[in-house]
Image 1 (cartoon, chains in turn brown, red):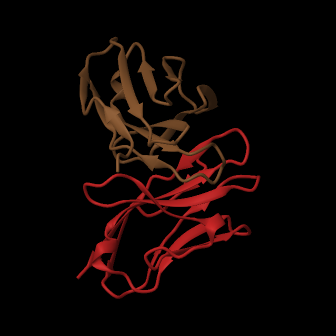
Image 2 (spheres, rainbow over the protein chains, first blue to last red):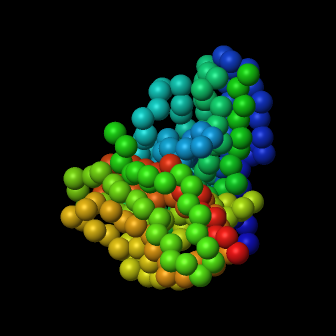
Length: 114
Length: 109
């Protein structure tokens, strides 16, 4: 079965550039959330979207933004990249936004900022 | 503020021995708690959630509100249990989700 798919598979950028990461949820899932995982740490919540609306936001600067499309796919945008933005970016989908929802994760997009 | 604490980054046990992975949380409301697992070269996946009160692959976890803990236990560890385990908390308001830093479990044959 087609799980959560993320693209690109990896990315290398330089400081100050902009990046767009993409995520396609499992068919039938209406919620997508984004996480940043720095090496050696657990995933850190960035955003949750449901039915194209932002439903939750973590403690990240305004350089981070996201959106969800009518087909429930999602993009994460990061502007003015900093070295500290180097991390694995994970997308997860779920059926809805109940607090006990099971999250299904993609394999992630590793981003290196040089 | 760190909502979820996993005090052990690394844990090694022998096959057949009991295993306990510790998780403590900080939240004043009634949280939803989960354990997620990542096996080698696989995606992060849900192991169990406290609301289901289930046992998955022999693992159980009990929510102790007095001690604010949600430790993961298995009476007899197997080699295939070797993985990275993350404790996670979902707030019942505000749609926030927090992961701990993870515990890498190695089961020695």
